[in-house]
Image 1 (cartoon, rainbow, N blue to C red):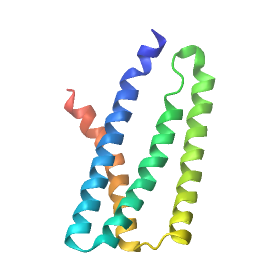
Image 2 (image 1 turned 60 degrees about the horizontal axis):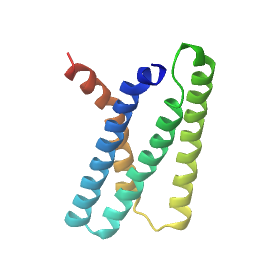
Image 3 (image 1 turned 90 degrees about the vertical axis):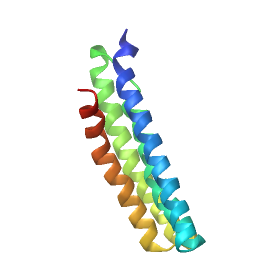
Image 4 (image 1 turned 30 degrees about the vertical axis):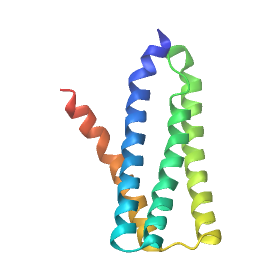
Amino acid sequence: MVAALARPGRELAKQLLLIQLGAVMVVATGMAVVVNAEWGFSALIGGGIFVIANAVFALFAFMFSGARAAKRITASFYTGEALKILITIALFSAAYMYVQVELVPLKLTYLLVLGINIFAPVLFINNKK
């Protein structure tokens, strides 16, 4: 019963991650075809940074469920958010230091997926009415 309470949230998070991953792949492929392979690779890295960090957050956010686990839910949520921020910083740092990336597609794709993260849940919620 308790696990069933978190199921809709987990499904929404899974759908959102799949939409984000699909958008990253489409944009990266489009940039590789239209501009060049370096732009496509940079777009893939920029979007991948967000998707990976968001997947870690989703894993921690929906780890627990039920009223009795309220303190664990809160702690897990904040842990997931802190890890998301740290992973984002670490992956951007690694991309800047160790990989030859183009900054425009890297940041544009990151911001695109961030926008999807902001607006897609509104579409999911309005779609169910």
